[in-house]
Image 1: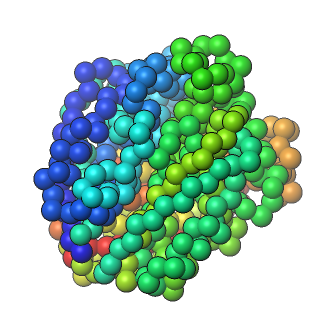
Image 2: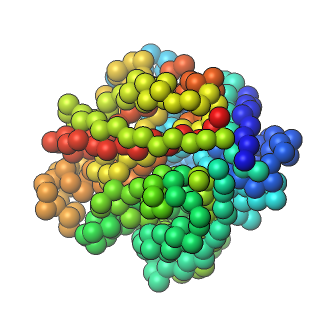
Length: 139
Length: 139
Length: 139
């Protein structure tokens, strides 16, 4: 059994979902581990991670729209608005999705389903570089 | 330290929560690991995983009803409706719950609390076989 | 590669978020593992775990208020109310946040971002002792 630690920095082009499956698979391909567990961790609270359908872009748009309606940026009820109206909604959307993902690996490949992709979910209107840590344990 | 990979295929009888703790515990019992970490991963985005109270069936019904109200299948705002009105809500409910779970194992047993069970959460009206991957690392 | 299992018991002073980063870091400091993966697991379904901003207390208050509004304790629609009006909302809020967290460890330190803290999220009005299991794998 062995392990590896790595990191990626990703900057979304706009608020919303951006697929990072390819970047993660590329890192995995460079490790000498065939079977194991990959953990993906985001070091931020106003952006998050999600595994979601990656075939039909409508799914991503509908999901973004649902969360925008559930956690409106026009809500004046937030105390925390120092960085603008998208600041507190970003933290809430982060809390409702994931800070980390765990994905089994077999024969050097992520065991994602046929329609699953790994996404960075940028919740701020002005995307910034996001640091994502990768940990792999296996053999 | 060693590891094991396995899989289960589960088909819910109806839309909603179905407990799979027993199936997972049975797989675990066949592994030669006493202490470690079990990861449960679902290879789908219109069904998800959840650890929830498994004693009182009312809890499961209330949770299903809450999510059905939060993410209504009657909502005509979704672009993605090719597979019917429960299609996009299924993806959203999946995003709000879990694609993977991590559960410590001690003395060959899942370290679940007294009232915790592991559930497959089927979000489609027509349940289909769902593939669940299991990864165990420990010794 | 080696592993360690441990546990913490934490009792919140009130319903809501209580930071436990320090307690977890203290346990980690006692382990002989420099790099690896820490899993934090809560053995309850009416309290949960969350990684969230730990600098500005407004963020925590806004998040608590958002969930209180999303899952109102005044809702009479719940079947499960044996333990009071906060009982079923507690299970729902638990389902919408996390039962477990996975955090990479490097050089003996949690790889949390600069503004990230680990929180116990107590959803019951009368906080009770909550058992949290820790698993560490690494070397």
